[in-house]
Image (cartoon, rainbow, N blue to C red; front, top):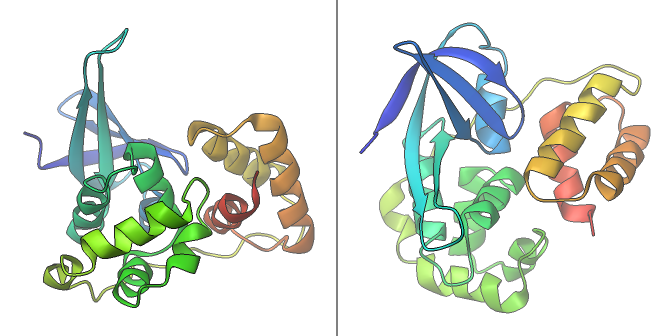
Length: 206
């Protein structure tokens, strides 16, 4: 089992990090929180905690690595995927829409409305997450927030727009509606960094 990958951050998008270690480039699916924490470290050494996902029985078996900046975020991810109806991508989307601390507070206070605002989460799934995880999150002891991102430029930045659309596409959304939502968000909030644009889009995209 891989506990973590430590090496040079060779490439980075809001949805994926490539860490080169021992001459091997490890592609890890990441959340917006992890992206925010390492966005200034391209070409520098990083350490990401790993969750390995092996899916068998379909037409093609798949082996996917998920990377997390903190133990706490990985712990939350592993708890989320134990809930019926919450798959790997949905769990990552939840963690891209809130910080680990915010998510723990949402679950602890039974705020199913906030969970429902995440794309793909219905009322029953939101309530199931709260019921299943409310007691378990106490043991996590999450107190530290992942660092916030930096602001962007004062006008629409096409590079940020393209990066946000790419991230949404990798999360399973169609490019055309993603592009429309991202443009609308950036027109109203041109100063937002890419991770905030993606977070807002996740709550608006149909």
